[in-house]
Length: 319
Image 1 (cartoon, helix red, strand yellow):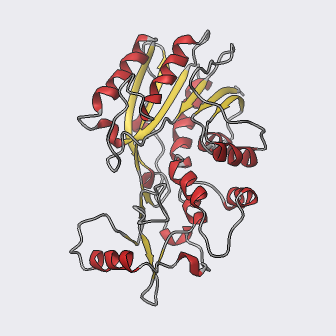
Image 2 (cartoon, rainbow, N blue to C red; image 1 turned 90 degrees about the vertical axis):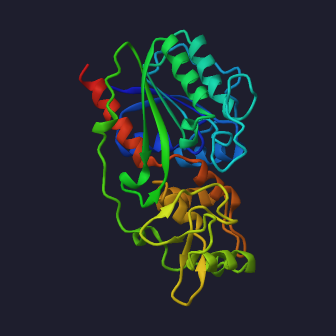
Image 3 (cartoon, rainbow, N blue to C red; image 1 turned 180 degrees about the vertical axis):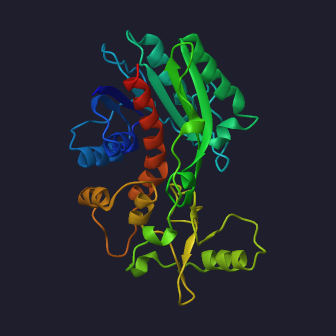
């Protein structure tokens, strides 16, 4: 069996690594690059590693043949709910760090065979599209052929409406990857992902938020306040405020937030994974963990990555 040599840039908590493990793809991790120290702590405990935080700025790929490079660069400036500063090359926004990957590829002695990039759908909006097209043209100049698709995690066995743009680039004139042939999976009931016994700290008690929920239930409120039923909406980094993902309606007329564990389940991580993370960030009686919510919201849905990785690995085996 072929062993894939992989590199994770903007690696976060390792959704890419998790997908490789779930698909049982033989792989050798050549390097992991992430500047957020909390994410690095989580990655280390999840995968029994000992990495330290490092920036993609000035980073160089090791002089070995890389089969697959994954980079999920910051999305804040592309997001429709953010300041929309964009990621234009040389703009020095967080989202412009996307072009650090291009610089890394330019300077690589041996360029990776495959490159995967994931980001928010806002990158396809009229104002942001030039940056997206620049990214694709830079890759083409480096010898890559690229294809992209908007994928929704709801189509891959996760009851979360989370649409993201995925770009798969191949070092060669003809890209053999085909998004239309990805293996989709029906999403199970949302109830499968919910905890049975939830602490009172997850109850919605703020009068202002309860007012928003009441108006949403009356269908007279235009802001994005959702009551979760068959699925939730996109899990964001701000689950402790007014979460875009929505609220759970309880039988006693009350409402609650999704728990941290539920958010990780809805990103494709297991309870064992979450238990490991709790060794780093222990639960506090009356306080929710903003760090864990943030890490879940910034991650990539694992089953979506699994479908992509599975097809790439199949392409590699038939060469």
